[in-house]
Length: 165
Image (cartoon, rainbow, N blue to C red; front, side, top):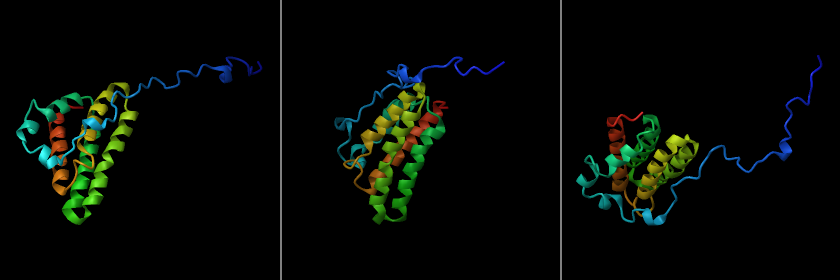
């Protein structure tokens, strides 16, 4: 029997290409400067009980990102710790640490884009939190990086406590 080249042949040139996003939906999160913190984090989060205790902001964030794995969240924590170690080594390298911390936004946006449909909403919540807290107005000194490190550490702790993946 001879091989038939025309068997099940599809004309790809005329194929309907109107829906080529492979099920990808546009992100619900939009970068909006109104949602950003406009003062140093060390001042904004001066009242620690409003932030760190259960049923407050960080606990609620940990609940909303429960679909993420520990390793996905620890990537954010690791980069934050890296920024913290830069300033602990030399306060003169604050700008370098600040720039390193700012890379959290594109890293998290990239991971949100790669995430499955079910995890995307959790990544968007994490991205929203990072966008709100990491900007030139909120990170002005080493103390602000330390506060952000405490915030992320608290989110990781609550995520683990709540049984995150």
